[in-house]
Length: 161
Image 1 (cartoon, rainbow, N blue to C red):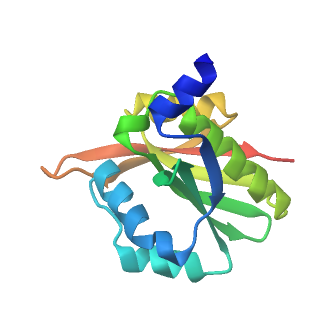
Image 2 (cartoon, helix red, strand yellow; image 1 turned 180 degrees about the horizontal axis):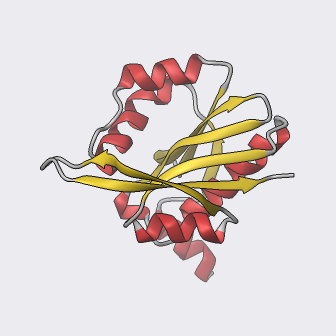
């Protein structure tokens, strides 16, 4: 009974599935709400049509509340972006999204995954570290903030094999 009430309260069961072109506008909206320089709908449309790009959406009920995007090159991939709507954070959904996405990358023959994360973004760093990523390098002044401040990025890596 509790599980049913919890599911009803949260809007439904979470599902992670491949995104389609119909999702481009919503993915752009989520990206814009999550990052300083949001990607536009046309950028998502381009990624969704590329053969070497993997895009998953995270749905609760009928509403898309998150996504993960990676670009694949041979047996390596780079996670370009991952986001979950602010109203659904801190529930373990981003971890499930990330791990499912990594599983699909492995299924496509990817052996090593890279990503960049802002050095001071502790929630994201914790997510990646708990998912098995380790720091592989640092990029000085990689991210530019709206006020012009430049922040460092950490290059993180995880082997899937």
